[in-house]
Image 1 (cartoon, rainbow, N blue to C red):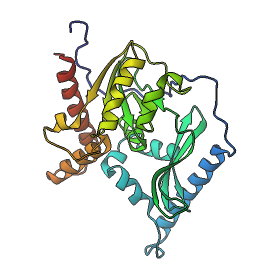
Image 2 (image 1 turned 180 degrees about the horizontal axis):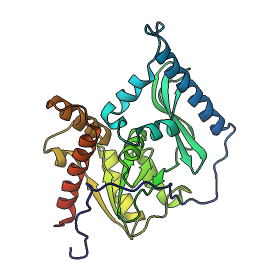
Image 3 (image 1 turned 60 degrees about the vertical axis):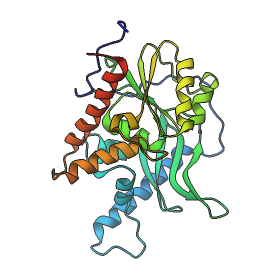
Image 4 (image 1 turned 120 degrees about the horizontal axis):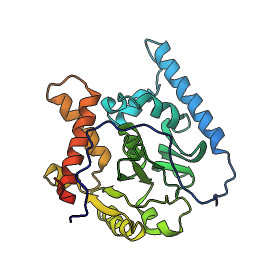
Length: 281
């Protein structure tokens, strides 16, 4: 245990930087231009926002995209300093499905577009309908001096880790962890402390062993929200549920909306759990 670091100081501000990503040159072929789709979805989002500002009484059936954002991630988290940048770069709107879209980038190229809520040909609801690469792994290092890296599971977690400015790798689905060795988008991560923000289900928990097996030079640890909160949680409870819960609790305790206080509370929970996991002082 002596070779483990002191607990990472997650309360300190993290430095913003351009994404540092590592990929192979092999690209998946596709018959449509995701960059053009992204631009069109961005235009649709701006049009919705323009309409919302223009009319006191909104047209019948109008979809307020700000409400959709707040349903996904609590409003106070969106109000963090990076909120506008994250929204402007990644979010769009699908008029067809009346739903938010989130675009994932490799540098300036759109690799994946996810529609939060869609409908299949039979009329069944679909969450996170995906165009482009489902194997793509977003990866970003905000602070090179912070050796911690968080693994998030899903698109909501991608947005959250961007907003919180934490070093991250995102798996779009649990199954991606099972094939890291042959995935051309798996980042080259070495000598870091990887903390997996596990969903509360067996499938997600199984990914931990695959992460340990692939990232052999790293220390890989689970973040279990039942441990953090000290209570039994519903199946599927995840990092997004946790962050939204913390934001609501701070407001319900009589505090004025304060994005900084929400972020500090989330980071404090994570920092305390990391101290317990790695035995730091």
